[in-house]
Each structure stands twice: as C-alpha cells, then as structure tokens.
Image 1 (tube, rainbow, N blue to C red):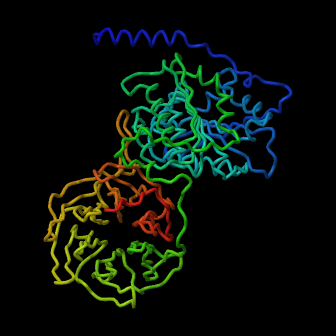
Image 2: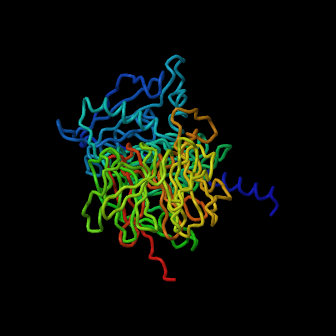
Length: 588
C-alpha cells in the first residue's frame, strides 16, 4: 500500500472508531439515593503555596457521613478537582463516594478536590483548566507536586481530620495531565500514596512524561495499584500518541508485575465520556480488599539479557544487618562470604560472620576495604592520607602508602592496588611489594567507587560528580588503557530547574556514583543518589534498586554470603542486605 493510502486508511479508522464510541451514560452509582447518607463538601480557603511560589490553589474537601471523631480515615486526592465536583458533570464524585462508602465498596474516605495553581498576579482565567501553573505542576516529572501535597496540603488537612498514615489507604486521581500527575505523586512517594486512577493520562512528551514506560521497566517494582483508562480516539499530536502511550504504560506495569487494570476501548476522544462512565467501577477495583499476587513473566526476554526481573527474588526485600552506626562504609567480603565493614565515626572495622555474629577487628575508620590475594585486608584512610593493611587474625595495621587522598580501592589477583583520589581527580596505582606509586589516570571529575570485572581485565570507576562509570583495560604491567565512558548512570531530576514544554525534564549533572561491586556474571552494582544502579557486562542499565533509607547517603555495596548472592549496602547509620537471584557459577 502506498504511504498516502496507508495514512488515509489510518485516518478513516480513527474517525470511524470515534463515531462508534458509545455515548456517555450516567452510572447507577452516580445517582443520588435518599436512603444513602450524604457527605458534605467544604470549600477551603485558597491555598498560597511555598513550593510553587506565587501560586494560589482553590480546593474543597468532601467529608463522608460515616466519619467518626478520632477515627482514622482514608484519603483520595483529585487533580483538576472542579471537574469531579460538578453535580451535572460526568464524574459526580461526591455522589459516587456516598453510594460506594454506604455499600462498603470503599472505606470512609475524605476526598480533596484541588485545582492547579494560578499566578496570583495574573487575572483569573475563564476556567481552572487554564490556570497558569497547570502544565508545570501536572506534566513535570520529579517530586515537586508530590511535596506540595505531602508538605503543604496534608498537614493542613490533619488539623481537622485524622488522615490514615497507611499509604495503602491513600489514593490519587486525575485525567489527562492530571492523570500523569497522579501517577507521578505515587511514583515519587509510595510511602505516602499507593493507589492511582488515571484516565486519558498524558504519558507523552509534554514535559518528559514519555520516559515512564522505560523507567518502570528499569526500576524495582513499587507497591502501587494502578487503574488506567484510554481509548483509540484519544489525541495524536506533536507531543505524542495518547492511546499508544497508555498502552505502553499498561504493558510496562504488567511486565514488572504491578497490580494494574487497563480499560482500553474503541472510539472516544480526549474527554471524560468513558472515564466518567466507568468511574464507580474503577473506584471499586482500586479500593478492593483483596491483595493481588505479583505475576512476572520473562519468557520473552532475550536469553542473554540480564534484566532486573531475572535478578530479584519475589518476596525478598531489604533486611537490617547492623544499625545505630555513626556512618557505615567500606563493605567487602572474604572468600567464604563473611561480611566486613567500617563505622567511620566509631571508628572501627567489623566482621559479620555467616552465622550473624559480629567481631571488632580494628579501631581504624576507613572508607574502602578489599581483601588481597595474601589474605590481608587493604583499606583507604583519607583522614590520615594513607592506604593501610589490616591483618584480620591479630588486628595488626601497617602503612602501605602515604601522602595520598584515598577514597576507595580495588585489589587485583596479582596484589596490585588501584585507589580513587576524588579530590585530585586521580586513579592511582600502588604495588605493595615494591612500594611503587604512580598516577594511572587523571581527569575524571570525581572518581569515587572502583571495581574490577570478574576476570580482572576491566577496571570500572564511578564519577561522583558526573553521569558515567568509566572503564579501562588493565594491562599486565598495571597501566590503564582504552578509557571510555562505559555506563550511563540515571541522573536525578533537577527539581529547581526549568521544566520546558515539549522537552525532557532537567537533570542534575551529578549521579553521585559511589561504591561498586561486581558478580560472577559481570554485572556492576553502583551506588548513587537514586539507589543501586545495576549494569550488565556490555554497559547497559539492567535497572535501579531503591535506597533502603531514601533520605540517608548510600555509600557502597558488596556481594557476600555463602553463595555470594546477598547484596549488602551501607546506607547512612544502617547496613542492609538482600538476597538476589544470582545463579551458581558453572564449574570450569
């Protein structure tokens, strides 16, 4: 078929689909019943935001009739709240809430109907849809709007009502840009919200939202329940194709094992005809009491792909190994799988044996630890500008090299040491046997974590101040060659940056790439501002594991345990471990 005929056929199909869409119908659960207790809607004073300076948000709160003084209540936040409140609209949310709550299809739930912010210095627009800050707040990735809800609106609500702190009892809803906004809040703050209802969601490139399907497939599953709705007649314009974008979202969520429901129908345009018709049913599904089992299907993965789903064990999560520490760093393991780390503020170096017993080995505080082929534990001690060795049998400490600014280190099978000197932007070579010390590389902005590939032929160095993990070929004489930016780190969103229409969101230039580890398959585990970023041997990102403690620094990681399949991470004042699905190496 000629391109012109193909285009004509697509356009004809689109028009035909739209013509065959069923008209909006009032759902029985959106009809008022005199026998059902009616909640009340309270208009709140306009909210002047600090997170979005200069903007004012109009909002109202629905209070269910069944709410009892002193009892915790569920919460649902509606973006573009005016549309859901309209008594003649397609949603009629207060009536639907009355009916579903009375029947027990959802718990007594306070609903917040909030409009996007508007610049207080500008005249009021003819409709809240035109509020000046709507696209910035709703279409932007990152946590700014989530913080607006959790740091400004929630505390104000809690002055009058006892909102449940359980994230399973908190939901979000929105349509179009409000739909992607609802998802973004839960994505950024799953400890605050875990239920999402998005209709005709704008998961396109209005402000970078088209990245979500990729991010979902490359990020550890979050504990979210998501209802999506879209139709074949939705928008297709310069920013993207809404039907395809929502299908991509649904497919990505399903692939990663999320509790997801996708209502996709023929026809309908970019409106609330279909979403309003199924609104009560979507709420019933969202608030249902049954817990869905996570179903993960990787049969269509390519055989050589080391995807995140092949690494994670279902049901396994982070477990606390050590706590109440000053500052944990320098994790490593020995050949038997025993775990070692440093509390830099104690200061001390500890061993945690396979049976869980903990032994203090030294009073030194160090930032990097690795065993050498001679059985000695080598360590970086930046405070004393030296590299030392620690004999784990008797605790003897010896100086290996001085006058350095060591941060982290790697030790080769030959006993050579490579250290990162972040302040001087150097990777330095040390030969403990001869005392030779020389600069192996210079120029990485902030060389920090460092690790060798399983065969020892590649040295990887993370850049704390940049976006790459750099790779070198290790030559027999210890020199480093073939330097290249081998792995591209996922960067944090710059929440203070400019979120431009039709462009990717602004990102911070620094990944804060820190300590590293490798497994026998050649995966690289790199700690960073966003969590533990895992790469395959070819440098492709397998995925990102969230920090166990999101607001504490994640300094380093190592693999330990009897089978070498347990990931240990140093995360501020605690150390966590997590068993992974790393198959046993095949015998040679």
